[in-house]
Image (cartoon, rainbow, N blue to C red; front, top):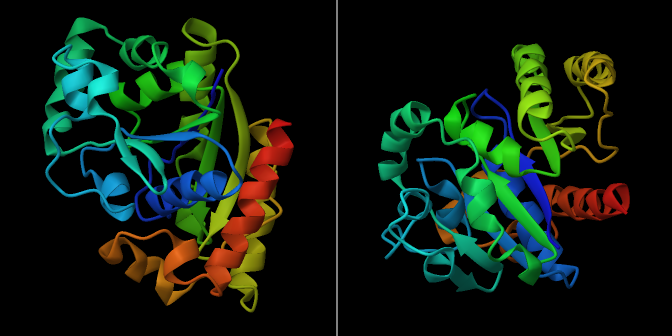
Length: 253
């Protein structure tokens, strides 16, 4: 049975999609069978891993009941991917009105035995799409950039997780908080790390030991449709993400 991991943060620009792509690709390099699933209407996860912008079927078609999950899975060198696009934004209102918090969990039940991991990227919002991801998840990972404003909103995220735990998914856990865009040379990064460790403790989790350092390769990578390990294998972010992937595997056991 697949371990389902959701990358989440209601704040944008924290490296969430890059982390989802790097985690999925890194797990494949570790010999794992991986399904990466894009729940963000921007559709950047598939694009970052080399999928064409236009796809025959997307996660929206699945959640609307128009396609079977087996028919929208795209196979790539970085594992299997279920893409998204802007049409999914319509689902935010539709699925709220229908009270469909378990659409994703039910859909994944058909294929999760075929994978070791399912990696789910979510939009920078706490909406019905995010709730669907939380309801299906075993673990959450919270990427946050190394700046003070990234701490804002984590309390609300905790409240949402607690609500989902009480109503839909009692087994959900926060696997850890991952610091991204990290510079070990600045005082601010150290201060943010210290405050983030305190927040993590309040959320019942810890910081990942591996911080992700800044690097131009991270911003260039999506345009080339390559993982960080292929595009810039010797870069600092690639080194950091390798350590992060191994840490994820160790934490889950």
